[in-house]
Length: 195
Ligand code: GTP
Ligand code: MG
Image (cartoon, rainbow, N blue to C red):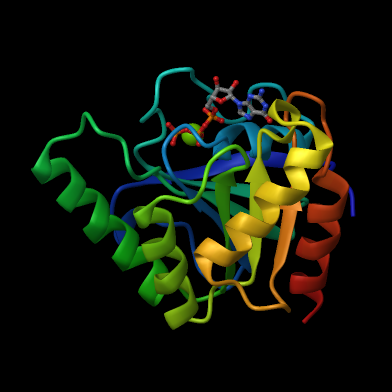
């Protein structure tokens, strides 16, 4: 699959602001700064569709992108950003729950983890949560350019183990910098849409 058309369709903090359901959706979840927005730009071949930032906590809303007039990619706000207040992290939790637990048309959530690090307790918690709602199955290991290919395989095994991924689950290394891994991911997305 190739993405030829992409546009920001809605920005939401509550369900009343979501675009009409009935369009299949694939969401991206992961800690703040892991590279969710960069991945979206890579997949869509757009430089600035989603705002990328060196300072974590950039995306604080649920952003719905319409893709090829066919489905949506949903960029979820990142977690694990240390400098948010308690009330803000509670708001984040409520926002995520309301989307993940009730969204009609949501096929899967692709979880992003940084290839350099062992997944955090929050990453594991998120993956367990996705499993519980049957939204798991695809993990993207971001920033693959930052490790050697030898280290890459080792870290992928470690990520699999730490998240408790089953053998059928996929883990796809991707680099937004080197523009690699996106074709594999797009093929997986295509399979999800066909089912
Ligand atoms: P929030 O919106 O804060 O949740 O962050 P995010 O997950 O959307 O991350 P974003 O795409 O904004 O990227 C965060 C930082 O990581 C930026 O400085 C990016 O340039 C950098 N980055 C993202 N992907 C890659 C990658 O594949 N390789 C390298 N080297 N840097 C990357
Ligand atoms: Mg972002």
